[in-house]
Image (tube, rainbow, N blue to C red; front, side, top):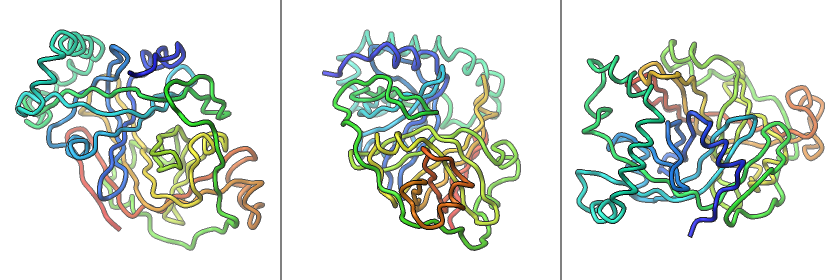
Length: 317
C-alpha cells in the first residue's frame, strides 16, 4: 500500500500545472512534460496510445518524475497502470476501478479544462493520435518520493521507502571541451527560439537507488556543443548519482492553455558531473561556471527529440 503523501507534497502537486515523467527506452531515458491531476494519492494523465512513453511503459511500468510549484520540487518514483478502451488486457482493471476511474477522469477534465478549450480552438489541426480516440488514460502510483528546496537541496519531507542521502561521485578534473557544432542547431529555429539559451529544466539520471528526475538550471554552451545543468550538491547526494551517467535534459516552454503552442527539446547523451571542493583539477575554471555547494552536469547530447504543438522530430549525432 502506498504511503500517504505529506502535506507539502500534496500542496505542490495540486498547485503544479505540469510534471515531467520518465520512461526507460533503448535509446536512454525518455523524459517529457505532461498535464495531470492528483486524485486518490496518485497522478492521472493521458497520452497518445502510440507515444514513446506509452510503448515504453507497456514493457516496463516503472516511472520516475518531478513537479515544481510554490518554491519546492517534488520528485517521485512509482508504477504506471494504463486504461485503454482498445486494449482488452486493461479492461479488468478498468472494471474493478470503475467508479474511482470515472471520478479521476472527471477531476482530470475539470482541472485541465483550459487545455480542453485549447484543443477545441485547434481542433482542425489536431492529429487523430492526439484526439480522444487515440489516447489512453494513465494512473501513476506515488510509491516513494521527497519534497526538496531546489535552491539549497534541503529535503523538506518524504514518504515511502526513499533511501537516505548517500555519496555522490564527481569527476576529479575539469577541462573545457574543444569547439564543436551544437546538435540543437538541427532542430527547427522556432523551437530553439521558444526554448532560449538558459532557464529552469528537468534532468533525469540513473542514480545508485534507481532513476530520478531532478530540478535544475540549465544553459547552452554553444562553442562546446554542450549543455550545462546546475543543481545543489545535496540533490546529487539525495539520488546518489555517479560521476558519469546517461542523462536526459528537458528544456521546454509550456503554454497556459494551448498544447498546440508548447515547444521544447529532450537532450540525451553521456553526462559528466563536477563539483568545486571535490573536483581538484581545473577548479578555478569550474568555479566560474558553478558556485561552491552546487554541482555542474555537463551533457554532450548524442540524440535530440524536439516538439512544437502536434509536430515532433528526432535528431541523432
